[in-house]
Every structure is written in C-alpha cells, then in structure tokens.
Length: 119
Image (cartoon, rainbow, N blue to C red; front, side, top):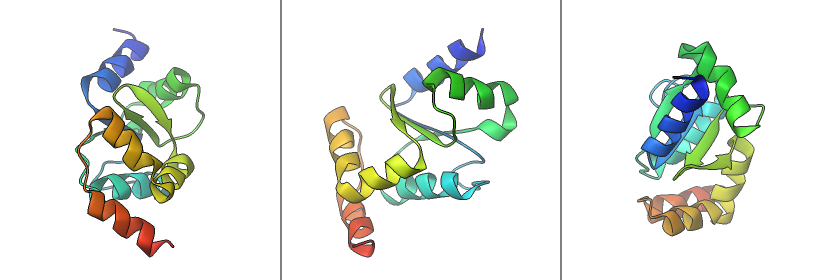
C-alpha cells in the first residue's frame, strides 16, 4: 500500500484526525501542542498520528494536502488547516460551526471558555 493510500485510509477512517509531531498526550512541538490542546479541551474524539514515528507519513502528509507544515487537522475527510488556521477558527467560532455541520461532538461550553480567555 502506498503512503498516499495509507494516509487516505487514516483520514477517511476517523471523523477527526490530527497529524502532529508527537502524540495528544505528549506533543513534541508547540504548534502540535496548541492544536491537540484545543481538541482535548473541547472534548473532541480525535485520532492523533505522530509524524515523527514514520518518515514516509511525515513527508507524505505534506504532499497529500499540498500543505508544507505540521500539524494538519482533518475533519470528516476534509483538510481544515494547521495551527494558525485552527487557532483563528477556534477564536471566531468557525471551528464550532464546522463540528456542528459535520456532526462531530464537542463541548460547546469549553469552546466558549477558550474564546472568553482570549478576548
């Protein structure tokens, strides 16, 4: 199976997938930590894929999305973006809307607390 097929299988096999450096419990970079922290705080059930554990995946995900950086968030098979985009979407409420539209469970009160803390 090609790396692109493996990535496609991961992205399509879970509602929310975060390709990151490290894991949700032990992120290995600040950007990955921020996105995983948002998802964890909002109670989103997501699959974390540690790109540091597999060089093929690390490069392959960049080619798959045509996006040069890690982390990368996918929701219901759709590429959402990296750390800056996810942060902006969280603060604007767009991430909530995306989760609601796609039927992804999350803690709305937690999302509001993030916005209040950053107001």
